[in-house]
Length: 263
Image (tube, rainbow, N blue to C red; front, side, top):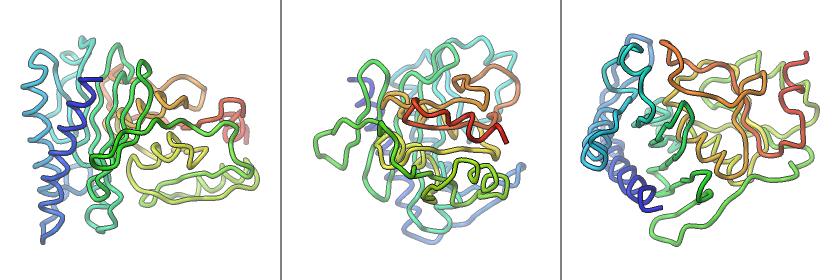
């Protein structure tokens, strides 16, 4: 738990750097993959990178905003930090507050610890399978959270605010009546983790740093993050850092993969 509290403190410092830029005019540039980049992304990256180097100097780090690391090098890593300094840059640019700081520790291809910080709300989600999952608002005492079992009827489904697509709508029609909630960034995972949503299917592109910390949070809360064939979502197993399509859910008693793949 001590390490987790250190990570929460680091994520909060990164959040302060983000808010300093969020509260004034800022420039937006476009990266090679056509995704937006702001000074807030870079400021948060530097805060986290420097803090983790001091905290765990022997543990390598991969970040959305760091230089690409060849798989020939990182493929040998058994343990490493995987971070997204500002998840939801489009939400940041649109100033809707739905962006997060994501820090995950990966061990043997799976997230072992995850922290998701929501700067605008002063809110943290963090957890590991060993100690459970927690939600903390500011300096209040952390409260234990868990997924909702059984799922609501009709289930509450959360989807991307910036990446909605017709394929998602078509597949969701197969699960029958449901309530749809749109949300940005890793907050979609967090809604499942705290039992406010039941299901989050992602059929569009994401990268490994987008999901690792939030996956740790969901799994610590008793939920699952799986590929469409039901396998636990894994990390750093190939050259590409793009995730396959995946599903996030709380109530394993329902066949969520079957509902959206057998169509």
